[in-house]
Image (cartoon, rainbow, N blue to C red; front, side):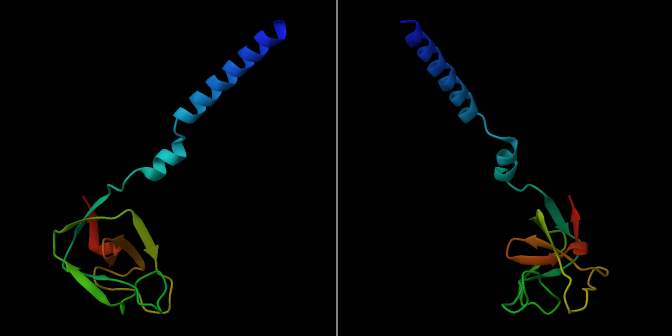
Length: 115
């Protein structure tokens, strides 16, 4: 009888630990699932380029243009791509090799300002 009481107590303790452990979301998982809310505004009319099949993951000044952002148009971007390739840096809004990833492609980072 005494052994059965200890087993029930241990089983209840394990169930309580599992219930609390499974119900809480770890902070790292919560941060990953959060949506992007970083808003940016175009400083001037700028081309949104998408890297060609032979350019790698970062756009260049010779990437195909998908569309244009108008001056003042707002976009959401939470990722920066660093271009360290053979093509020269862009010079549209000042020199640089950082590209912001926006819906549809990539834009030179200096052509956007945070809103």
